[in-house]
Length: 49
Image (cartoon, rainbow, N blue to C red; front, side, top):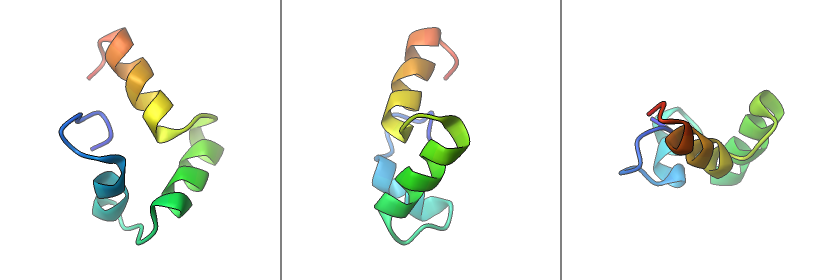
């Protein structure tokens, strides 16, 4: 879901089971070492979406 630019980060968080966008941001940052929006930006720049 996160690689889909038509979805807001808030929508992605909800779709994967988070009720709170901030909780998703914190968890994602722990897993990936960066924010979901930065990950999305890098993915697009690398052509992986």
